[in-house]
Image (cartoon, rainbow, N blue to C red):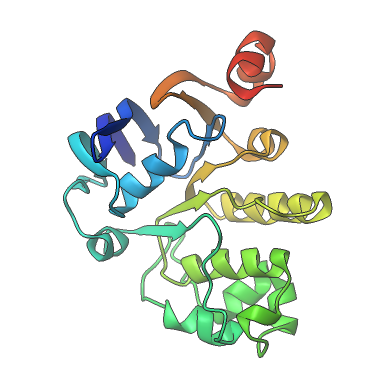
Length: 236
């Protein structure tokens, strides 16, 4: 389980996270929602040890390991797999090379190991493109590759920052289906997402951020039943 308590992060003198409390229970998918610039990616960067921003107060504990203050590679070794905003695949490497360069031994809660064969099963389109270089892939294929690369680290918590960014509606639906497959596998996930429909379709619980603070926490059903909150903080 990930437990973030009273997290305060700064870009220089700018106080961007102002006391965030958030939990990701084992085997659950938690979504973070909010408008642009409210602190969603800042929270992900803080969690992954990617400075800036710098966490100056608070705690982020994952499976009883305190993550605050650890370098990014130690946080990854603790079980966090990151799908960054913008994908950041290796454009000059093939699909297979992108996946294998990140490979790390480990097991999931159900005892299964993420390897190439298992990635091909979840993302069959990548099987057809395995010898293509990253710069030869479509946006949707690049996103599949970014998720597959994170899975090859055999994480126990998969963190995805805006995975639907730039994708056509049909590809967003495919992404939703792939996330649901991972959810059925029992993988714990933290999803930052602007596509409200996608987030509500896959999440067990949602948090809304505004100005670096949590302003709502509840189930997708409860959020959909609260149009005032959705309009005020999500603009819908």
